[in-house]
Image (cartoon, rainbow, N blue to C red; front, side):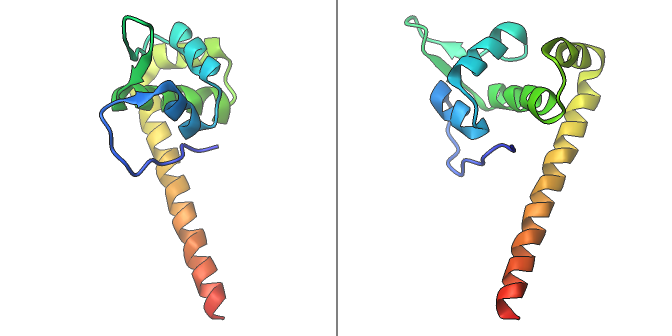
Amino acid sequence: MALKKDKNLKLYYSISEVAQMFDINESTLRFWEKEFDIIHPRKTDKGTRYYKREDIDAVRLVYHLVKERGLTLAGARQKLKNNREMTVRQEDIVNRLKQIKEELLEMKKAFDAFS
């Protein structure tokens, strides 16, 4: 499942908002935070997490590796360690292709409606 786009740009997002973006549990986010050092949301004194755009991008990268590509957590960590830049570029390309596919399907649907 791809990232669900949030049209409202905010500075900080709650853990529940980020979990909804990726259709995963909050506990999964907390677990990934422990497993991947690239995910480090800001925490209040009470432990409430607030995710910045950079944190969400890191979650998207881990989501891509683990959920979409099917890597194990160890495999995803190794992939990020060995060549993070290439992994980020590949994930960006995959996301862009998904967006193009959605746009094409919308065009097809609109075309079929006129036929």
